[in-house]
Length: 193
Image 1 (cartoon, helix red, strand yellow):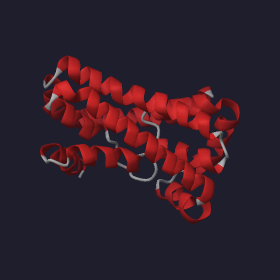
Image 2 (tube, helix red, strand yellow):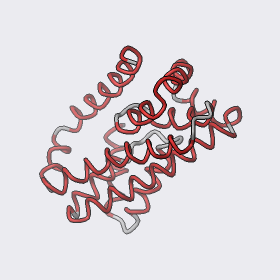
Image 3 (cartoon, one colour):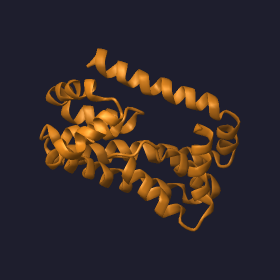
């Protein structure tokens, strides 16, 4: 199933709508959608490595704007929409813990969630729900999401199509590694902060 989902996302890179799909995927993933935009970013950048930074910028803008939607959901629509998203991903137990993180580390909590595989959408929604300063939220999101996507774009710009072959060859290993990183991110936040 994951391979089919991966292939479906990749197919957008072969259409004239790839850039729009990247923007929309990044936008939706930051507030409610489960598929990370990294896959499409990689596919588009590998197809034309010279545009890697352009794609990273589009992905970053979509992600930050989607994060603003997540903030709005938490701030104004937590009961009607936000709670449903949190429960859909079975992240309700982490929600109160995230409030504690925001109380102690506001910008750092957002930054870590924005850069790592930690579910960023939970942090965007909870930032609005807990009335985090929007300017702090926006700047931390802009820096962390841009750092993440420009790192990917930079690697592809530097190494080109070899990265794509590597991803295709080791897809299952990468999925396991991504999942372990996701779990490690939660453990890191729980025990370190």
